[in-house]
Image 1 (cartoon, rainbow, N blue to C red):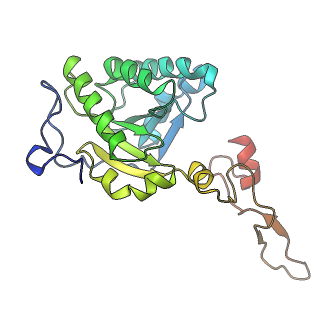
Image 2: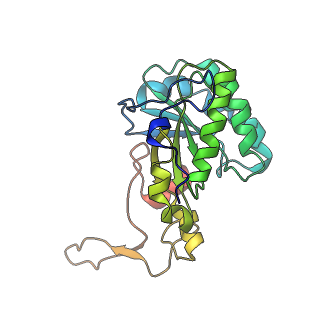
Image 3: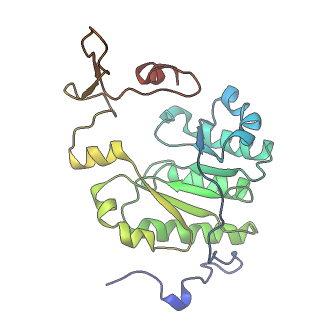
Length: 241
């Protein structure tokens, strides 16, 4: 049994007065998405100069934000949206998951205040099409009520075994679907899997340095890498960035 809308009604607005769903998603560069903790005044102040350097500025409200700063992050995102002209650079937000104490307020406060500038809502811990249907309907009601002229798109993050199992239904749940991403840390936790990076590296995982003349090959735990901005090794990058 399917819970999807019929093809005839798939592109019908879910609320009277809401904008028509997009039949073709806009073509925009999304090579670099810069996550910003909006409650941090110093970092939020750098957004103006950052806009021309990245493809998407994303106000992060979810896991990286301490519980006691959730409301400040939400208010900071709204302020960030009002203070800047994003032009061709996308403005996204990653809200808290729908079953958290903050998810509903994220939607109810951000969409009325900044929905005319917001391009995409990144929704974490999506487990099935029902999560997309709920957000789809709620966004339509808010867009109609606050006269928002373009539909806000949804980017789903799959972070549980159930979400991955339902990937096809999630992908076709709404014309708002912008895309999907995997959340490796929570997905690994959902499956009881060991990880090589998130939450601490596995002690047996590593790489060998290139052999040098007369020298042994040094073992490095985890992958070696670099941060382009800081020109440091990945272990240092974890501390500096």
